[in-house]
Length: 542
Image (cartoon, rainbow, N blue to C red; front, side, top):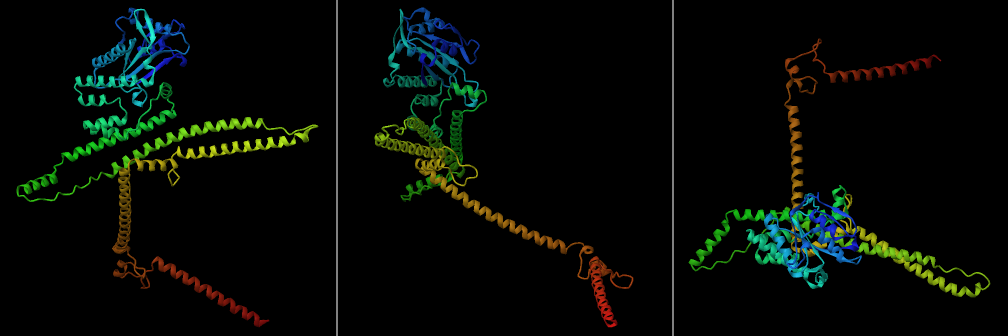
């Protein structure tokens, strides 16, 4: 449930609010504007009804007349003209159950405060699947701010304006009890118990769930992060295909909550599987204890073995807790950053104003007389300028450091960002047992990874060795006609006794190349010897 006011200081009016919520056409007689929402979808018009005290005039049942009278009763330009209760309706109720619940709540408001109530039931928003708008049936209960009697509107109902009066909390608890009773009558006792405690804060809801033994609710909501409403402006921007910072932050929180729900479902599934398995150990221990009691033999109780959860579930919970803490760190850093920037802007304005107040050096006939006062003023001005500059530099450094807490580590960075490190420390402080389990799971994963790497290296070495041996065997066991020997002939040629025309074994290609090389070397040596001998003969003739 959310309680809001509609005031002229925000540029709003009761006639427009009523026309939009009831899907009607209303003309504002004060301004002459026409608000036509008769073609709007998502409004169950037959479920829109007006509730008033028994002594109220008959004209209050006409929607246009009623809200024009509400506007006419206020004369101030900043008046609060209406108040709205936006309530979520249980999804387990049918149409008749929802109508009865809204009527019960509206009549209770009328009876307690003597005001006029215009209630409209809306269907789930079309964009609810994308996280934009309400995901269930809900009602807009528009109330007048003044009490009504036989003569029309009278004094203001101020008890709802005072936040310390406890009226808003009273109506939260009352509506939660109404929802629980309606669900109980519809046969949904578990949901009824949850709705009765739904108006409490998270800690109160978990405590109530613990008292009634609702472990499923605790598992789904213990680690969930509270979400924030998008707001009408953000919803309109997102529907046009554009993204917003507020929408991105809300989607991060929704993703974390979805992971928490998945973990809770996985935990429930594992527990169900364990309960379905035959409890052999427990049965044997029970039989042994029964036998020991019969024979008056005292047995020592077997120490209970702590449950070891699967590492993937532990790591997922640890990542979800880290992400939750990181969102909180970023939110706090953004608040501090905004405050620091406001201070920085103020100091910059002060610096500019101080610059314009710089004392001027004396000139003229009495300059020497005024010199002393000028020196004192100039020194004070310089000290103030230095102090302002120092504060600006310090704020700039703080803003730069805060920027590191509001970003994640880049892909090429080896270490975590300061914000991620702080979130991890906070997660360790908040969940020390989970941190120990996560550390053990990481160490186990690293050990298994090292062992796997060693096994893979050994497997590769064995495969390479086997490959080399297989290649040698293939070369040795090849076809006899293709296996070369030392003399260059194949085994078949040697066994067949093949020879050339001179009776010598035929030369192979290798033998032929070797023979040609030897002939070339022999010919070059013979030519060099002949050249030396011819040179000697020419010397003797001279």
